[in-house]
Length: 542
Ligand code: ACM
Image (tube, rainbow, N blue to C red; front, side, top):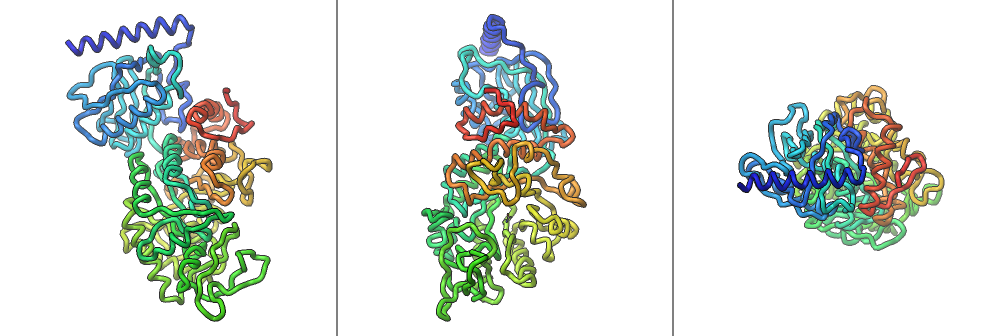
């Protein structure tokens, strides 16, 4: 009885909406014409409509608490855009018509861990996947089929075009890096960052937790790192750091979005914030005063013959600081930091930096990276480093992040390392769009929106093939980026294109087709309050 009533009320609502729609002469929508980003692998339209009404519920198969959690996430997102509050519950057997149904298993086997099948019929929306991560990705696609704000039709419901989407990622690694060391960002800022990139199916957030200008994570055995080393930032602001509890909160928030946090402690260079916190880490090597390479040299941390901490640094030069192989405290420090970080990081990776160690002797650098690799492994994690680690004795257990020098990337790949592609001329999102951009640097390039989209990871570096590439990552270094608005302006819309490069098959991508879909996302970004760059190369629709 209840069953019939629900069907009837659903079909009455459909009929009402059809009348409403024909009165308004709205065209019947076509699923294949929706501006979904990243572009799905396959979309087949069936030309009808599902009515998402106030009575529509989100049903999950069985009693899976994880599916219920995803269902509640979907419900709250839909509440924002429809004003409805869809109930979330177990389907208790066969799902009733008129609802959204989340179900694990039985989907096309080649969708893998993050892929999904989204079927929209007149009487049911079904998201099927092999793993909850795939359901979550399908939910992101479904959300893009809704308007971004509550529109006039809301009381009658929302028409969703029918058809089937089968979708899965090209690369397993689709990420962004946020440098919280040059400028510090709050836990809430990082959560917003996670939400913004997750909406485009990114699954990695790499956090740059230390650099010359700041140390941003509490290390209980070396407390001064955060307390003193975290007490400033570029330009001399007050900086900050995450307690281990706050870091765990970020990790859990990301995990609920099927995103892995990759923490980076930059070693053996980019280390001034640690050298400023503990005198015993200083080696007495000659380094440029205040990091100004054209200026005079001073002895790192040795003042008047005594081992002293360096000064905190608030400029933007790079490559002037280093750990010392000769100091007994160096590896006590590295062991403690990586151990504590591994303990609070459930993800499988630790990033040890390894870039721009310009004042570390090459032979010492190689020894450092080899030791870091052993320490990371002893802590049960896999080592990631910037491309310079290709010079060390790395093997297939290492992951190398390419950013500038192809030779290092090729060297690392020839030793078996897998590669994350972050070519600075394409995806360093702190680069200015053009010479008039109000934020950003341009040492790598000016990067307009089409230039960050128009490239392919598998043909980026000679000799590095698709199967050696884990995926793509778009870093946001923050020398010039101090607020959430700044972050959004540099990230968007370029990040959306990088997300598509990581997810969608290369042979289906073209700027001319993409820019039209991207234009529709201007409305979405605006609705979410994202302060994006309105490139003149994109035909925005408002
Ligand atoms: C880097 O841009 N130094 C990795």
